[in-house]
Amino acid sequence: MKNMKKIQSHIQLPAKWILILIVLGLLGVIAVHFDNPVYQQTIVRITHVTNSKAKSTTDEFNNEDSTVTQKLTGIITNGRRKGQTVHLKNTYTGSHATDQRYYSGNQVFISHNNLITDYKRDTSVALLFWIAFSLLLLIMQWTGMRALLSVLLNAVLFFIAIEIDLAVHGSNILLIFGGLSIVFTSVTLWIVLGFNRQMAITLGATLSGTAIAMALSWLVITLTGSNGVYYEAMQYVTQTPKPLFLAETLLGSLGAVMDESTDIISSLFQLKKEQPDISAHQIFNSGREIGREIMGPLINVLFLIFVADTFPMAVLFLRNGNSWGYTFNMNMSLGITQSLVSGIGIVLAIPAAAFLAGHFSGGERK
Amino acid sequence: MSTIVALGLFLLLAMFLVGGRRGIRSFVSLLLNFVLLFMAIVLVAFGFPPLIVTLIIGIMILGVTIFMGADSDLTTQTAFYGAVIVLVIVVLLIIPVEHWAAVQGFGEEDSDDIVGFSLAIGISFAQIAASTAIFSTLGAIAEAAMAIAAGLNEIVVQTPHLSNHELFQDGSDIGRQIIGTTFNTLFFGFFGGFLALFIWFVGLHYSLGQIFNNKIFVAELLEILFSIIGVILTVPITTWVMTRQRHD
Image 1 (cartoon, helix red, strand yellow):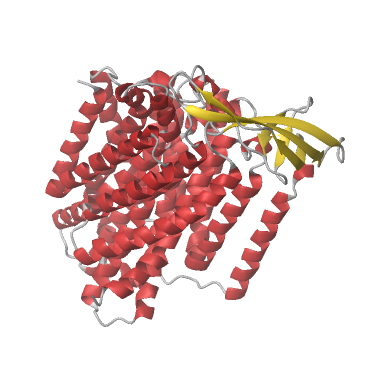
Image 2 (tube, rainbow over the protein chains, first blue to last red; image 1 turned 60 degrees about the vertical axis):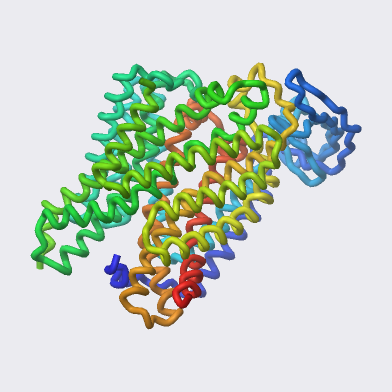
């Protein structure tokens, strides 16, 4: 990593502009807080709350909990009924699995017959987005904005991909998301690296590493007959689970493999620039050296993302008298499989990146 | 043979071929992190307070990931202290925001999966939601802290008389290098995991307003934002730790 010091000189954003952008962002958050007129659904601001006494409950697994009924008074804040006072009812349990306690000042969506349908959460998202945005500007400046741009662009592409998938009713989902992976990778690397030889090699390494890993994993999954992988436990499924799962895995690993290939290849290009006479074999070995340092932490990043989300459901399973094994199978087997397949991709991208950089970085010779 | 065991052995073999003993060590750290995470779930189900369990096990996961991931003492110690400080700051952000956004437990789209379960289980799902968010950020924080610490370590070894100010400059240079690609890891990692949910949203024509107030989506989006904030904070904080560590 000794080349770290001579990184592209970045453009310093004037402090005045950073401040203006941050203040504008804050105004945006405030606007989101008062965006009720934009919504079609009726939103009520709660002004008064009366709670009943807590009633203890015990279920068949001896879980002790309590139930409270709330009588809420509120004012409708938007639409034709704006200004009307409404009376709402809410019941919550101590554990809040599917319910919540409301306080005066909360805003909720209601249906036509005055039932609470959801809680207004957009301000919290906006505020957190603003914090991330401000920190990015302050600490990373332009580089941060470019990273943000690439994420937003990918979000749009992601949405388009889903529209295509739905238009063909989920047939060939792997083909669609496989094809789109190529577009995702190209666009992202183009934003990060520009359009040059280094970008082409990184693209090649990312795609070949991912493709080989997916193919080999598919082979292993097929040979073992998906034994112990419970596709039926997959959540939010509206299409055939197995291809959907493979598409999720493909997308999930793509960013990490790209991350790694970019790191390895940019270091190798730097190396080649400093020592133009270095052989392809030496480049390959250096690439492996860099790669073996990154791969462990990177696999852990994905593992924690994939498996942390199973926490609430796994606790629910255990408290409902299910065994550790059954809880694992029904909640974690898919996340673990996904982590392992992604891990294989992350590892295989290392030789791919090192090989391609060794053989095709020649043109950079000066 | 079960598919998970077969894939696990395949990964172990690949890691060994590419990374040698280092690869095996990385594989063991992955295995240990799984055991720790599973232990956290079991402890919470036994009735231990979720946030305390999460903090203790979270620090252990950071330790496993960092100390088994690199060799140099200065690198690992700097990365570990930096990551723990960031963890504490992120936890202080996560708890109030998760409470305010009320994204605990299960959403409407989970209904099919929780049918037949007793939901009044006497454990705070609000705390579990905060725990989930904390766990999901740990990997990203550890990875960023290691990248910054390793890069700075290299610089400190080569030019020992660098001023603190110059070191901060170098720290943010390294930060700039990793931030773009780290975002991609996080973005694809999270969105890849929730492809099915997004297909559901688009397929059932959820409005933008519904999506940005939807419990599951907001929970997921907040997790990405916590991770991003964690990674950004890691850059100056790890550098600051390095300015103090290098003289010890």
